[in-house]
Length: 231
Image (cartoon, rainbow, N blue to C red; front, side):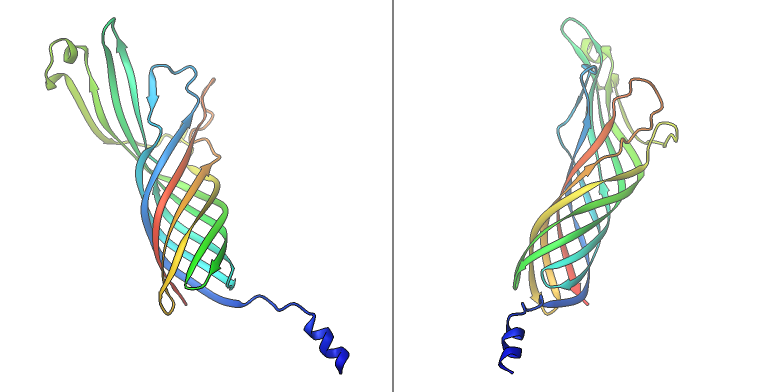
């Protein structure tokens, strides 16, 4: 009897089980970095980061309190801004300014580790797949007359949807994701959370449709908040 008690006392306790599903809504802002080798493109300049937005649904399955499997389904803007020098004189650069807004559907699947009680710290990472849904561009192009004579009549503003070209555009999206944040239980199963998430794209947004093509990738940082309920 004494030996049985010693043996059972030496077995480590199993992790506290949570065994529940979590469902909620998330939304926030994002900043996208459009990565491209500019070595031979001296006439173009891309902004370091361009703002966008993200919103969607967050789901999770937590077999134990400290570990869970999380799947988000979000719409996210992977936008970029470009200044293109279309003509240059001795004293003047003629620049076309373009902001391109690209809307993607992303589904990141992540392992989520969390620590704490009412306020919990979350660290998570995994991969994501997605699809490029739409593209829109707006901006202003200037003619030489605008700089020599002045006046807005020589400035051409544009605001238009960009049709997809199946030969040029790769609409599939995939990569790695990781992030971290805090959550707080505000009432029974109701929780509020805030986190920062990185999306690192590994697929070129272009198909290999021409020679000497510079690959283009998206790296996106999302600042998002969520309200979730444990079922």
